[in-house]
Image (cartoon, rainbow, N blue to C red; front, side, top):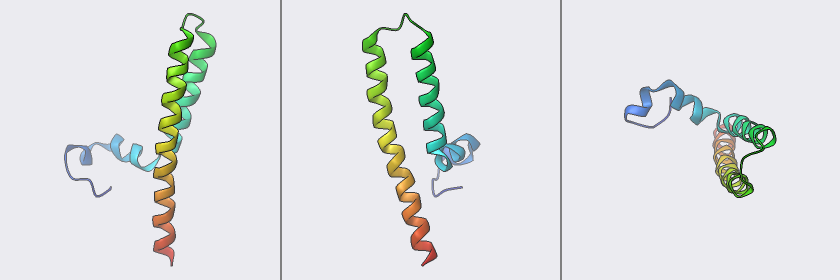
Length: 77
């Protein structure tokens, strides 16, 4: 799996999350978008807070993917 040592190392979902953060982010974003569109009673402030949180999570996801790409490129040379 990874270099993590501890209880999460044996948890299979943790490995999937570590390996596929962009996929999980896109599914979560799509789900939140559908909820925001089809549940009219959600306050606008809550939707804006979720959008801000998803932007932050997107930034973290991008950095994780960039680190994986950089590591893979270093391994090939």
